[in-house]
Amino acid sequence: MRPLENIRVLDFSAGMAGPLCTRNLRDFGAEVIKVEHQKDSDYTRDLLTESGRKSGYFTNFNIGKKSITLNYEEEMAWDILKRVIKDVDVILYDNDDENYQKLGINYEEVKKINKKLIYASISGFGESSKFEKIKSHENVIQSLAGAMDLTGFSGDLPTRVGASIGEAMTGLNVSLGILMAVVNSKKTGEGQEVKVSKLASLIAINEVAILTKDILGEVISRAGNTDVTLAPYDVYKSKDGYISIGVASEKAWINFCKTLNLVELMEDQRFVDNESRVNHYKELTDTLGKVMINYENEELESILLPAGVPCSAVLSIDKILKHPQIKDRLMVMEVVDSGSQFRIFGQPMKMDRTPAVIDINTSKKGEDNEDILKSIGYSDLEIENLKSKNII
Image 1 (spheres, rainbow, N blue to C red):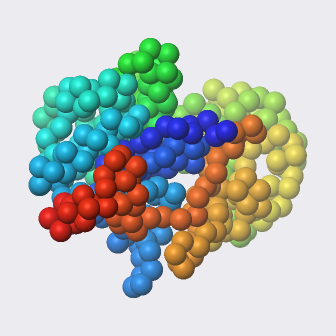
Image 2: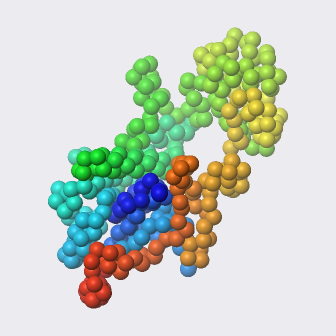
Image 3: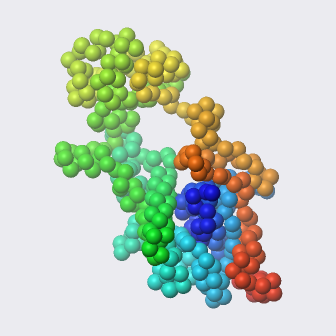
């Protein structure tokens, strides 16, 4: 039995954060019903796609989910939802979704229908804030959370982190919040409201910057590929590209120097311990730069990794897709969805007794309308009536 079997989720979210959350739940057995406005669907259905093909982006985050459409402006849509809500465990929505706001429902309303219901929401900045009505685009969230000020090189423009870390961290946090609420509901029979903001999700991983200010009274900013607490810890130019090397202990430093025949650096007072190396970072980086340029990435990895020195070539996406470690961990999967072939991300949570099962089908918009309505007691005649009135 999959761990989340018999858990039903109504997913009103779009974009990445919410759909990532519910894809995680779906991969481990939950039934996820994606609810979209009949006229205004999740915008990612048309993102990164070609004529006649499904969106690879949409498939990545919505694979395996069912789909129902409702005309939110019609009162009968709320009547349908009342009947669905009686039989679900979780509702997830995004405060940025203006369509959802048209439904005019809140936790106080839905818990009268289903007291066990978990009512989860995603916001950009949190409620009761002057930012509450502002769209939470990734670059704005990264700016406000300090992530952008920490990314890039000293003296250069602040830089957005390439991956959408605000969306991703929020998706993971709301997944965790829902799971804890589900466990509590099983124990107590009571649901609860779960609120996660993208801003809070990024603030929570800003640990070094906050601790440095709190403990040392120093404000750290953009430092390129370095680490203010460790040395050597940087990206170096090699014969055939770039390589990241991180030395986090004296043992690793000794192994690093011995492996690359740099014993003289161990005896240099500027580099005798980590504190000294941090204080003489430029001299150390300049010295190592002249060494690394003589090696190819594969050669450096072959001698440093066995010596316990973490390192990796800086890989472009085409090389990542071919990398044996990525393949071995099943982190890139090839799927064919309604004739469209995509690579999607695999499930990073590997569980030996209850592994994830990734379905290879994404419902078309409204594809499951009839099945879902019949499951909550609507007759064929009632369903045809809803279609004729443009409710579904």
